[in-house]
Image 1: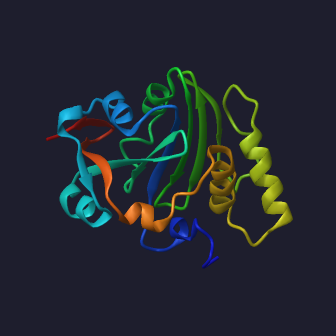
Image 2: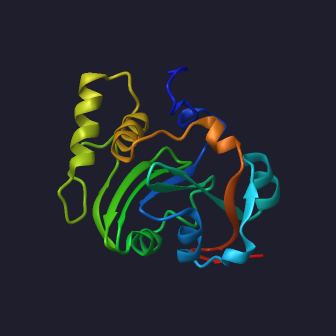
Length: 191
């Protein structure tokens, strides 16, 4: 696991997060879709985001191939169905949510509609309009390699689909970001 590019996703420092991939959009477009002011976007390293984001959160974005990824370390603002619908309007979205309670969720949305929602460790039928290729592929991967965690299996499948991994160095370095104030289930962009 140490050489695995996704090892950061299961280490104890990242208790919860939401990692979202959006096809064919650049980071500024994604943050604008979330309601952010493109004139107030800032580059934040992971440490700066942590220090400046508390008690709020900072959504940080970068690119991998033709996909933009958003990373939020608290999985609060970007992990809602409404946000996934907004970000996938006219395109495709893949999302991995690691909950602090041990729940891990994979979301696939296209054109504003949820196609698939599944928990990698659960064998029950996933929800969404379907088809459900992520659920089936993660389950198959875990049967072939039982030592692979469901979250990591899902991230590898998504990496193959989007054409690249998000490494710990990617997350530690500067990424375009915006501060988000969380108030209950509602959130607003600050600053």
